[in-house]
Image (tube, rainbow, N blue to C red; front, top):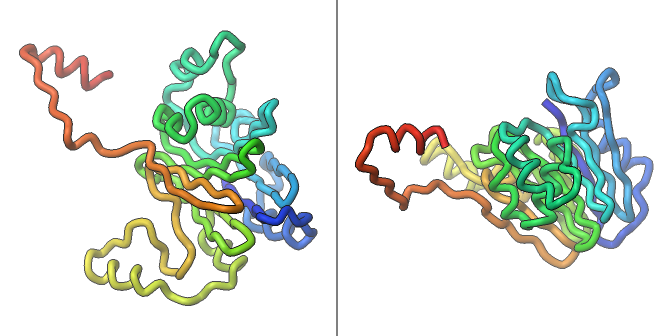
Length: 236
């Protein structure tokens, strides 16, 4: 499992040594595993660790247009995506490059085609925004905090709480957990949220929006006359 973390200052202030230390601490002790960090104006984002069997660059990619993707997870449909996203050029070769290519072509809606369990953070240099997203099941958590002047995110909730210094409990989380034994889209800490499953959280200096790219198809019904068609459709 890889660890993601980053800081985005909306006013483009320089990244300080303390900021870099925070991010590297959030990434954990990965001295023996590949670690990638990207720095821009008011931005630092990093990833540490690689899933077994993956290449050291699988969780980090940088595009010619300046977009950067840090990635945690796996893809089960790499070959299909390479064919779909090649667009007459050599297809992307890693999970992170496939993910950022899907985003560049279709926006957040492109994440729907990423079949597997994953979470990611993308720096969109053209829009000067950060995109945080997680697969439809939310297997690999990613947490974020948006303040007046910055966005912080981390795969580790404890590190994000340490950064922000927030210890105030979220009363809505407590009430929902006690009532329903769950509290979707919230954490125990006020102002700190998980990236919702099947959604992309897009944050720029002047706005933030959550864009769903997947929903459970409970309103669709499929009927066939031949049972074999059901088997084929299930495999598809």
